[in-house]
Image (cartoon, one colour):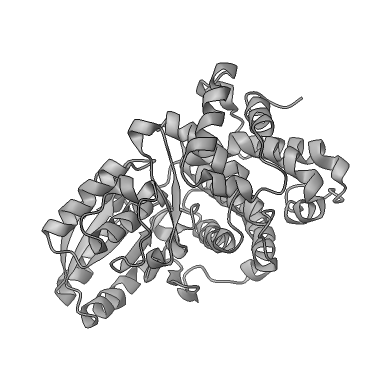
Length: 403
């Protein structure tokens, strides 16, 4: 396969609707990006990030150096938390607006990228708020330019048009998808990802697996989404154990970064359905819950529900994990159990009960899945009817390990 010969130190340009730079040392491309922004008349950046990783990884030093060289000024918002809120998006946008920011630089994983994309919309649409954006009170057609320095290998948000944020007072965690928030440039440098904790290394890669399982099986899936799904799972199955065993394995981080990128492209094409629609209520209720962990706990039950409707596709894309699947609809439980066992082998054996959820929570979770803006669209794309009974059954089956 291609990954046996590819040099992780050779930075390659990958073009989707975003121009992405992949490879160890890709952060050096920031110099060219800063020059391009300056040539476009942009001189003031709002930098949106979390509290630590932008410095720990060394990314901030490169930002300061490139911006100083090309005469760009930066205004820093470093308060983004996991599962970002519309309140923090409003804060970031207001800070950027007061500084006259003309573009947004996102530094971090999915949360800072999503918050930065959202702030970019608000900067281009004065008078609007994050809550209005995430309750669909307006449909944005413009945002200020977005540049991403991606620090995790999971969300794929650096190359697609999606963003997510929580509306805290409602326990809602909606998603948005607009063409105006495709990043202009993105950097995927695996050398910046070696300090990911073991848990986050696992969780973010499992996020990528969930992206493609869903994207390949929606009612609007296309051949590209399915092709990318099989390659994503192959790469995660091969390289996640290597990255877990040796966090400094740049080849493993490179391949996981590429897997994340193509998974983001896959769901840009095929969309998502059950797993993300049902995870968002979990982390809406418990903001401290890692998104990837929530997805992992739900995935086996969702595969069991969906397998009879798309057995051939699921058998094909899951082959790197379960090579003996034949694509027969009656393999549903076998496939679900096999994925659950694989997740445990990857170091994620947890189920909903382990995170404090009980049978008593199911009705509220079902209500949030039905009420949260945007989740109805995802559920409508599932390969089997997403009725209340099925949603409750998925949550119930995810409470504990399958028999």
